[in-house]
Amino acid sequence: MSTATGSTPGSARGAAPTGIRLAAPAPSWAIEADVVVVGSGVAGLTAALRCVAAGLATVIVTKADLNDGSTRWAQGGIAAALGEGDTPDQHLADTLVAGAGLCDAAAVRTLVTEGPDAVRRLIATGAVFDTAAATGEIELTREGGHHRRRIAHAGGDATGAEISRALVEAVRGAGIRTIEHALVLDLLRDAEGHTAGVSLHVMGEGQHDGVGAVHAPAVVLATGGMGQVFSATTNPAVSTGDGVALALRAGAEVSDLEFVQFHPTVLYLGPGAEGQQPLISEAVRGEGAHLVDADGVRFMVGAHELAELAPRDIVAKGIMRRCRERGTDHMYLDTRHFGARMWAERFPTILAACRSHGIDPVREPIPVAPAAHYASGGVRTDLHGRTTVPGLYACGETACTGVHGANRLASNSLLEGLVFAERIAADVAAAARPARVPAEPPPELPLLPPEARIEIQRIMTRGAGVLRSAEGLAATAAALAALRHAGSAEEPAGSAGKPAEPGTESWEVTNLHLVASVLVAAAARRAETRGCHWREDHPDRDDARWARHLVVTLGASPASDEPRPGQPRRDEPAAAARLTLRTTDTTGFPPVIPAASEEKP
Image 1 (spheres, rainbow, N blue to C red):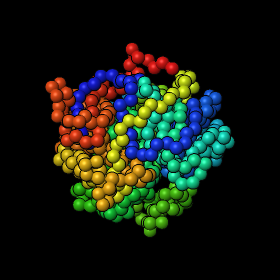
Image 2: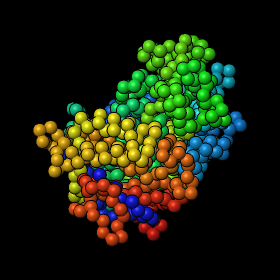
Image 3: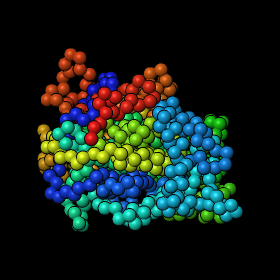
Image 4: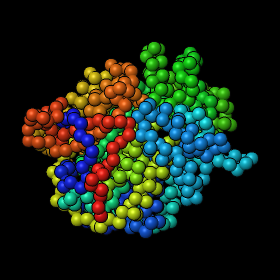
């Protein structure tokens, strides 16, 4: 995959589609809707419920069961200025500090001012949060980067599961049409470049099977994260960056993919551990747990004013530095002073996870190490969730609203999903778009074989994980390019010289490869250390050059990749697709709709 660099002001909307798509059979069935929501986490289900409430014919497409969205894995809680003495301005200040100078201030203010009422509407939908026995008020805890107790939690450490339960029940009660076990493939667009729906593949038997389509003039991407690009992650196996990859192939802009948050306290299961790893919630530190080395020394004390409750990027770096000093690959979280009762009542899920791996946190420190957790970047949107493709929206971890900047503040993710999903539904309802006729499909992107998944993860972990450098990123880019070349028409990737066959696993791997390639290109370009992007060869933050966002687009490669006069520089040989990187002028994003070309129905 080749890359180009340049500075391209503004965004093109409504242009004829010039994207690419996954190699897949043509849809054999189709259904019609006003809006299709892809994903069943807090963002997707909230958007769907609000769209139905506005009278829109809504279809939900989800990759697994309706209640298997990433939201259910969230332990800590949801942040909002609900407590006495707390204010949206205080929440805003903590968010801006955590974002390391790269938050879009307007997006953050939207989040923190609309957040409290959004949480109250979630409660009205049926979510039950933990309350104090004496007062009946919502119990609030504290997490990293927060100067106040503002984290509402449920079931002790099962907040995501409770939110998911409430929203799923509401969706089922509303009778919203749902297609489960369906992998979204690509965006359908009409001849003018407007959204016309999605193609998808339903896995297994059901009302629909195989490749089909949902025709709709509005599509909401809420597909979650891309943690599966790394060997060890807190994300479930379905988090393969499908929404971001789809948006890229459709010509949408993505931003800030270099900012992958590595949660500092993931249960350490050994040097060869791969796949989804158990998370030790930030709330454990919020309740007073201590980060210590093997000698019991609290190494974060003195390193930051908030010690163990510093923002996640700072704690992760503190752990990695101490590991280097001690010649080890993990530290410890000491909670023995909690006692058995507090563990059982406040953190029952984490207690069970630790004990299932032979660790009893009541009696011994918990071994922890950072692991990939959350993508602060994603598909670039405005404050209404609109992307640079007309009719395409994104919210939740799939989106880059500008709220998180270079590092997400703990427990802001569920709130962002709520707030911006509601805003998207309002915009979709107000737009009154006519149905669109899908144009002829664009060229196909060759598929990688399923066995490339592990190789991508190991390549990324080795060269684009917590610690990065120009040398390591160049080697990572070369290794990813070699995998893509092996999957090209000239050198097929499949066994016995056959191209990889279309199917769920090859589509997921191809999505992983695309988002990994964008992440590496952006990380190589950003020659500084900021937030959760840590460049060993550029250890300082550089506001003069880098207080701005990187924006990436994807297009089909020309027949020759030799630059002509005036063209941006190309960094790699021609391949099936070409990345273009540019920077914004400031920390604020430019409009997704140029002032001279407001979208018309």
